[in-house]
Length: 294
Image (cartoon, rainbow, N blue to C red; front, side, top):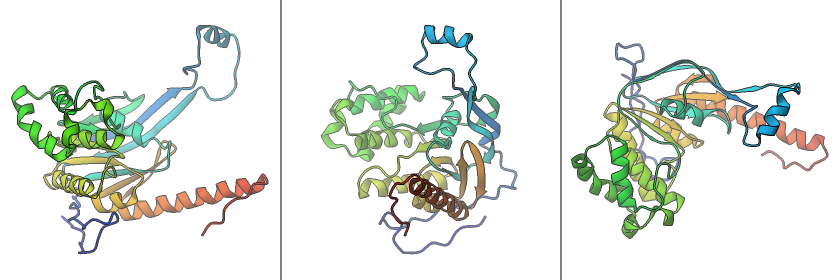
């Protein structure tokens, strides 16, 4: 089992660097916690909010050219074992969040197979699942019930969750009075309190002040070192290289590359720079004034 070297330097976010997660040997006999084989998610372009009964009837007798389906993900395959933390990166609209929703059981694959073993805890959308009229404390109790915990377990975890979220008197105020950052802090505290086998996170770790980000970092590393599996979607490459021992680049619904975080990040940044240059060239081509690339 190889472990990356650590330094005493500050990390990308100005916080002290923590010991990174160990890199697990994928060739070992340890069973996969997540198995994804040829996953595909297809959306019908004919089913939109603008479609009315009248439009549907007209479309039956009107031939329209162009694609009728859109593949948000196609031919996605990977495995994840305990102790591995996978960063899923790529441009907006690549299908990253869609992948997390499939792993969480929110979306059903259009093709392929997905197997997730063990208890899943996820934080995919800020404030998702919260009752806006209930207080933060009441929402913790509600979330515990949704997670399948009995009342005794919920009560045992209640105060540690409250303490970790560090919302002060707001913990007894209705969720509708919370800022997005406060909802994220409470959601993160709940999602990481149940000691899950699989933790799914979507763009939540950069939320909050330096103290909360430091606590979040320690909590994630604690889960990784206790042999849990984590899938993290983020646009912050610092989190990828410091938190994760694997990375996967997705573009237009397809896996472009999987491997060491530093290598995958380098390819992603190269592609992003190329895309930026192409867009600036299009602006100039049509007579616009494009900013210079430094």
